[in-house]
Amino acid sequence: MTTYYYTASSLDGFIATTEHSLDWLLKQDIDQDGPMAYTQFEKGMGALAMGASTYEWVLRNTAGEPWGYAQPTWVFTHRELPVPDGADVRLVRDDVSAVHAEMTAAAGERDLWIVGGGGLVGQFSDAGLIDEIWVQYAPVTLGSGAPLLPRALDLELLEVARNRNFMCGRYRVVRDGAGVKRLIADA
Ligand SMILES: NC(=O)c1ccc[n+]([C@@H]2O[C@H](COP(=O)([O-])OP(=O)(O)OC[C@H]3O[C@@H](n4cnc5c(N)ncnc54)[C@H](OP(=O)(O)O)[C@@H]3O)[C@@H](O)[C@H]2O)c1
Image (cartoon, rainbow, N blue to C red; front, side, top):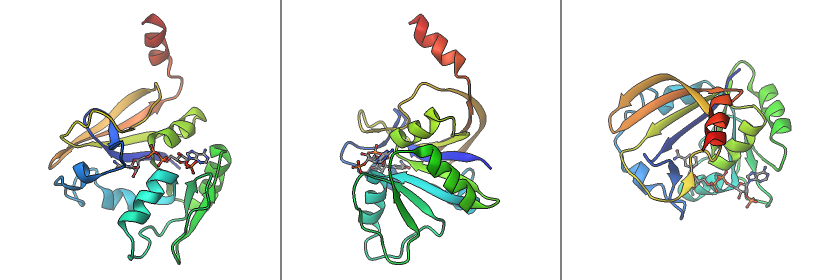
């Protein structure tokens, strides 16, 4: 069982604009069946978690369409958000470790995908619960926006690929983080 953070990012480390727009991303060319792309990745996922902004983006941008995820999806929020008919969406708050245990039980043989945003992934990371990070870097800079992952982590680069416009990287989270802590202490 592996817990993934799989996302696309601008080159300067933002996953959405400050207004939660993904127009800069959706205009890019990618082969969804190509290297490190979504179609194959998603098949291996047995449970998803996302934050409220990400969920609201999905609702806004798929209005009138069926819910797009077959997997049970935990949405972190302090609010009573709408849930589309037929969607297995579970609104939760606060304790990522308890939710991770529920996701693990629900996923069977498959893996877990923390969809984002970065702050929520940071909470899972703080609890030692993120194993791998896959980032598809788009050829844009945004200057500001929703951060990719606002934490100091040591990562090991496992794989790189080009998929059309995207530079794709797969990283393992190095658990003790000693290198980053040392760099910060020396600064
Ligand atoms: N580039 C990509 O591939 C990609 C991938 C994923 C997301 N995105 C985009 O990136 C942006 C991310 O937005 P964001 O940074 O605001 O992150 P987010 O994680 O989507 O949403 C943050 C919100 O989630 C809720 N939340 C987080 N942790 C919680 C907890 N422990 N308990 C209860 N509620 C919790 C809070 O909402 P409330 O308190 O208001 O309920 C918080 O304001 C979105 O626009 C999304 O569409 C892009």
